[in-house]
Length: 186
Ligand code: FEO
Image 1: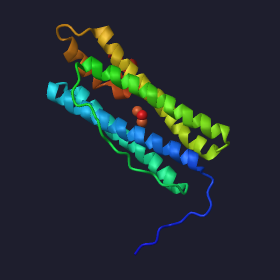
Image 2 (image 1 turned 180 degrees about the vertical axis):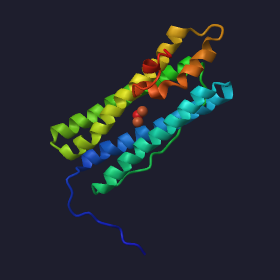
Image 3 (image 1 turned 30 degrees about the vertical axis):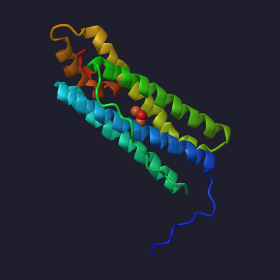
Image 4 (image 1 turned 180 degrees about the horizontal axis):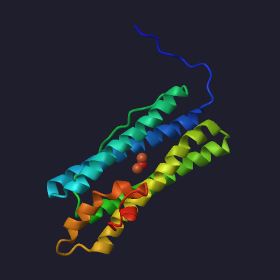
């Protein structure tokens, strides 16, 4: 039988490990939430929004796994989150993206809380690890905000929703500055 690896000494505190596991939970739930939204969009014919959300569901899973790796490498134990109570139906495409923006702001707050905690207890290793997430959250919020703005700029009347769905397909490159902004499409 394989022996459990026991870490006798480590700099990661139990409190920080718990906070990182809470973040794992949040990223895992984000992934499930976006996957559910992707499926709803697909059934409603918003195929570009669906593809955007399928990609983002996968990205959130990668965020979760990034923290998994860090916690276990640091001598802790990353915990697979329980995923329950995921919403399957939405009132409109606009609601989906408003919920995403709201959710991403909450994720940013959560990351900032852990970063602040690490700074307070002088855990600069975890503080440094989390900087990637700080940058990522700025991009994620920009994307979600831009998506919500599309509903205001384009409007939902006539071919508006169809056009918004097309533009959502271009959003990923928008956050990195290589998209519509630089090509002149928007
Ligand atoms: Fe990984 Fe969108 O938060």
